[in-house]
Length: 226
Image (tube, rainbow, N blue to C red; front, side):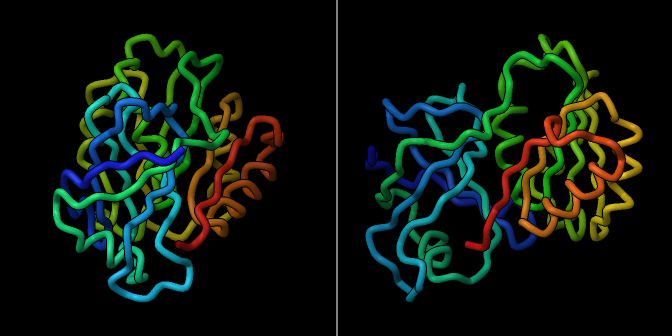
């Protein structure tokens, strides 16, 4: 199902990283961790992949006014078109889909691993009004090239100060299996949820498995190039 909606705001949320806020259609339903497809009416710059892309939703399901997506500005025709569309412009969004759904009730400790804009589904989850009922801790391991390129870093740092069951470990170096082998030993009882570019996801999973984490406790979603 497609919904007509409008662009409400644009914001640079980190170096080379753009957030688009859309008006949420009344019947648009989603759960934290899901994605939608955005389609622009026409491209202002050619793009071999066409005039639509999939994006994980970064806003909370509890926010009934707005939908937010975040992405790196790669210079593609689609992204250049979307970034330069004026506030009030119409776009289409497809009904949310995806099985990377984050739990409302935590049965055990969780470690979220986000690479770059892989933070989007975790932001959707963390911004819900549920932290007070978390029965187990959540650790976010958030990797970027630099603090300046890390979207929502200020909000996440503030959250880690305010929520006793949430902790943030932001890292600024290329991930290696050895890094995640050590982390696996530290959080051996946790469920691991990993989102990011395919290479980063593969490296993380390799390290976790070397550290003794079973495949049943590792849930992944790869962001292909777009």
